[in-house]
Length: 504
Image (cartoon, rainbow, N blue to C red; front, side, top):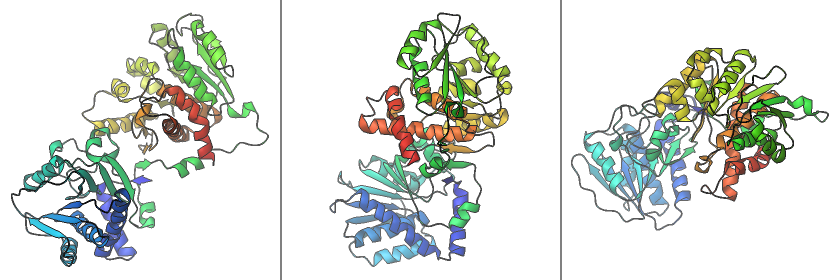
């Protein structure tokens, strides 16, 4: 799914109106109908009251149309129309006239200071003050309206965008003047700001509603941002030939583990084996050998001379893919091994965990990374690589620039994990849950990525498939257990079912 800047969405609206063809007011009617259906499905109790906060523009027009349709569906609805400049958009004016023909809906028009009544706890507030075109912080009557919504103690549903939130960069916004929605019913596309951690308190849970904008226009319009979709990810998976053998699915080397950190190498190794690699070798110190050989007999081990950490350079030329990092530690000997691999391995690497922390101390090695290498930092690890960021939007842009400058892939882990590519594109992953915020979860992802690269997937496809199936396995495990009790090993155990879902 493409993600467009809000300025482009306005152009897509205009293109649809011109080429469908459909009038602007009828497109608004179509959108309101879809929103109303979603509201009725979310709140099926016929006794639930709705209060619509509508603005003077087209988002307010959406809200007025929704109020009318909810009333026709025999729902209790009241409306507060904020019009401080006493000027409505043409479509908003039409919908106000239509709403006034519905005597059961009480419409209060507000142009200056106001005092809102209290609402019952079961009231649903519908925020339709401002849509996706906002580009400056709310002030005056508008900020007062936002404060009223946020202090009402009711569940809030925002139409398209929580009022006050910008579609992309909110670094210059005023946070207290943004509606805090529980649910956002966004039209046609998610907005970039929805996918950034800083904005979660305003967006809540979002649902994307298809309002029928022109498919041709969407396909023709370029963007750098995408949301991964299950069907598209499934199409990337290679079918296995009936006469294939283990050599067809790659030789992988996992350089991992140190004293007290055998678990990280074990989780990554098991995830690699559960993701279809043909032959896996785990380069480990002696202290981890008994654990690995016992817990995962399918993997081979390559023992380091040291009993406690990786210290000896290894020839990586015979392997189709190499991953370095899980449980590695940061011993100076280990750092030398990592730098040797970076300097001499000619194929894309997967670099995670302590290998990222080692790399961050030697930025001169960034340019030596093999093209197509995949780095998998969480936000703190990425800041060690690229410096501190003011907010999540700046961090995302730094990740895109870092990937472009070094011709590598950055998997910035978290909710809606972002994949930044050497071409400047960014793919967001919709799978996964907060239960995956646990030690070892990233090691599982490293193993999956290692397997996919060894099998022969391109780094881009390995990233897209890997983050999606990792999150999907986490969702499957969470469904059986809970967010609180989820462990990284549960994600590994759920990988077979996740792969099965994609293959089916």
